[in-house]
Image (cartoon, rainbow, N blue to C red; front, side, top):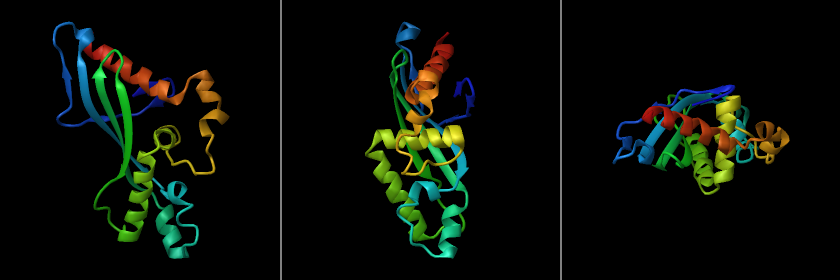
Length: 166
């Protein structure tokens, strides 16, 4: 994914397809790509764990591996994009309560695409999650000079798909 200052390497997952049935401009995409990042989940789950002891607080503040998942479906001229986040499985030192708290918060985000996008862009742009108190994060920075974050990704992905069929 390349867009001006934002350059991240997503790995295409096995089973991803780009189907050509005639004109390359009419190709259909069913692509899943993953970007791995280490980030502290504290800003993500800070409200859920505000009354934790010092030992747990250190656990929630440490950087752990997450995956940003990008799903691209439909026509390459107007693809449908969907993001997901997940914590990598079997991370050493992560207990059940910690894992469950993070998984529950990620499940909650899946029901609110705007909040999910906010967290995805926080990871991609800043390398960290955005706290709940930052509800108007993108509005405060002018939508990246008038361009909405969703449009940044769509333009980058569309450019990639156009280059692939050219």
